[in-house]
Amino acid sequence: MATTFTLEAAKTANLRLVEEEGKGLQALHDTITAYRANRRQGNANTKSRAEVAGSNKKLWKQKGTGRARMGSARSPIWSGGGVVWGPKTRDWSIKTPKKVKALAFRTALTDRIASADVINVDSFAITDGKTKSFISAVAALSDAKKVLIVSEKFDEVTFRSARNVQSVLLMSAAELNAEHLLNCDKIILVSDALETLARRTA
Image (tube, rainbow, N blue to C red; front, side, top):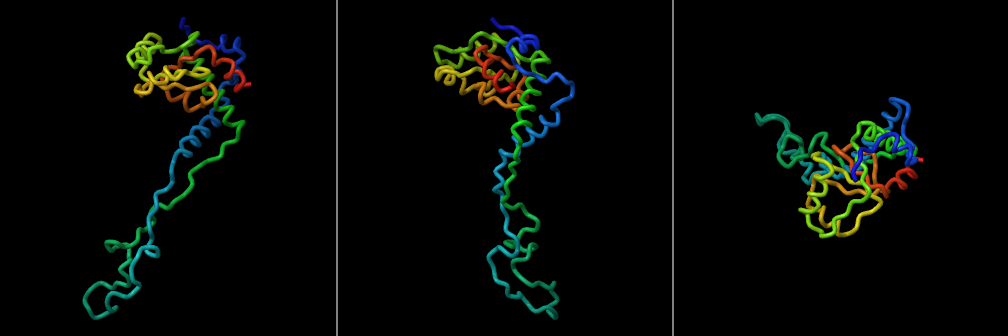
């Protein structure tokens, strides 16, 4: 049976939520920014005029030719020359304190529960491993475009039935983070995940 997971139900399940209005918003912003920055590869790299291959020989004399003065073929205005202010390899990662991430997680969870976006179900599993069966099971619970299903764990058959459905994400309660909670329209919360969520929000 599917029911809307309320703030009262969260307290009954021992989930520690954010009660003070506005608290945790900065932590949530910083954490989401860090998650996205940490996914950046930062391996774009260009060569300056000091790094490109080529001779330093002056191409023609400074005066008397009628042409513009030119010192090197590695000049940025020449084809094959260096790049001015181009990107360099860098590390974009941002370190976020554990307490900040924990507060961000509780803030995101509180917001989704308060907005009635969390649906509680006793169990969720697909026995035949068919994508069609998975889509039907999700549609019976929610008609949202993007759905996040959170459980303590999923069996291999259920994972296999969901792998071709890009609009639905299966996530274990231990791996769930604030970005997952915000990046969906509806959240289907399986009851067996409540114990782990209570431990993570404690």
